[in-house]
Length: 454
Image (cartoon, rainbow, N blue to C red):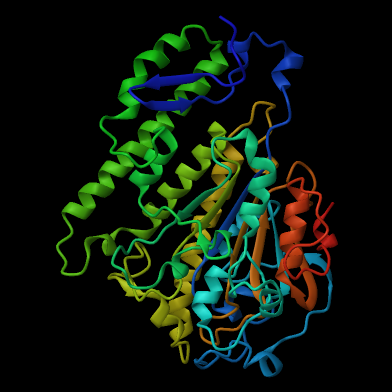
């Protein structure tokens, strides 16, 4: 039987795409290298801004900001902005960035990014929903589009490179709070187009079903892995030693995800609290499980483009950050109280989120592609927020970290200081070009971030 690059295991409507197995195709050493792996793009979003004095190098002793509310997100720009001296510098690790200490050769920090903002609209709603559209109020008015809606970067890139995968894009959220606290705009950063949001998937079971069942969200009637183990065992007899190990690791990854989801179900069932039970899910385990499902989708060729919200904007959700606090806390409310030592408590959540980002980078370094490179070598993994600071709700000095080499197009291990006021849409345009799109502009961009290229 002739084997194609992808071999499928099927059972009762479920379809599982295996990673590339060279011996199955009878590959020679030259063929073993195969075609160049697809580039992957994951845009990880953190909610409610960051504690900037603990995130940006050189600001540890800066004044702790007071709360700035209302709808004017640029109110503090002139008095608080610390102008960048543009250039490329060595990586500097701040207290929030310590979880990345062993990964300094794998990422680049970028500062000086701003984005357009329209007064009179909620800062958090725009923070999330406008993050990847970067449509300025003026542009929206010219096109007759209600700001901040537009077609988001992930969808634009997915249109161009998504035809080789099952899904053009995948949208994931780690919102562990199911009660309708906020409108959908606070929990999504992806848009198909004006007024057409691309809803993110919060529940690991629904995400799992989306990846493994052809009908997506229908009830998962049986355990996918158990149905496929027999076929996989038969298939493994035809494989070379290295491929048997790869197949074994792949099947174990599937099994591990299912075991962890069962564990999470038990945690929910045993939660003895009056608030909705999903609130007490340990955040780290939940986020890492969603991340593993995203990486599995990349590995299997289900998609190459994903948006990943580590949490929703503003929701006053009481969530359990295991290993950080002894009881559930409300992240959004904490960001408004940074005076005194208050910022140190919020910074613990910033560092917690950074640990989850580090986990994703580590896993992508471990996952091997058909040509022997790592998934991280072929990827762009961004980490940023729609607000520069959770207390001031500023739309300037946005945090941004970029990991991955995009197949040698990016030199990592650097700290790039852009001219203060550089539009974040310039970075989005850069990512689009790195992913292979031949476009000269995106939203309100004025050029690319040339320092990011090798």
